[in-house]
Length: 442
Image (cartoon, rainbow, N blue to C red; front, side, top):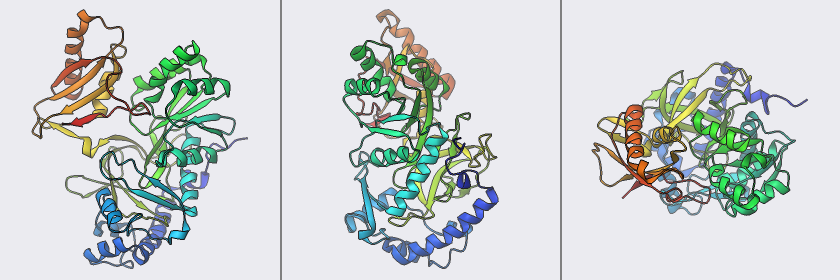
């Protein structure tokens, strides 16, 4: 009989035992970092601290934060891995590189122990979402250097499932492979199935629900926290759609997933990560309790190659539940409100693309759900210009009323004024994984 949890010792750990474990691992990790990482030796020196001064979690507040910009600068000073590399280079077994779409790229190095811990946390997540050894799963994320490609592939394999490494592009071949190889699960971004619908109908002459997929494991972008969008995928494809892959590529590839009965993300990185929240304005710590909102800050607990301390992720997290889940997992449940760097202020209102996405998904099929916020000048903003793809079957005579309805729905749900430009379906540029850039600053 298959176990309910992939790693019960960690996933169902008692909260008090977890605190003791984190305390012990943190003290050991900080001493390791101070002894071996040049960048952190300088950062500790600036804070007038050394590796022996951190005797518990409360002492972390005395240490400076780490940002992605610092990692980039470190790797410019000391290419390719930066002077925050804390393991001998001959211990590195795998190297990834970020895309660099929002700045210069960063190399991420893993030792064998780093990779093993990564795969264990990733397998916990995919298992929680329902993946089992009997599944055949096609993995459709970019394999070219990006962490989410090969590393997530290995995370999927760790569960015992059979994994077909397809990657991105050539959607017509993909749908034939899914049919011919008897694939029952897909791992991709949540926007990718919408992109594939046309390929199924055009290439195979069938509806997506007839293709045989039973489980969708999605991550890499928001979307599935909207019940309307999740229901749309499930109805179209006849599969259970699970938000199964939340992570921060610079830190840990995948450490959160929903379970089979609770659509809130569960933290599943126990023993690997110490989680903190901060107020992004004051930088003060925010206690992890029901209803708390703050920027996610992560510290490695057992990392060898490139351990990070107090790393600011820019993800704004809301804590939804802190007690044990009915599934037996004890990690807190949460949702990502948005990216701190994507947050826009309109007449004192904080606006996130996720909020706009939810409004538009609730209007399908009058709109496709794809949009782009175009920011043409610096703050202050009294309104936002938004391009919205109209639905495929909308008559020209109804365009004006649709535009007005979108404006009213956004005003009612999000309390800001939007200037709407309707554009044709599929006209907003997507990446190979079907993802649109939500905010464009011109």
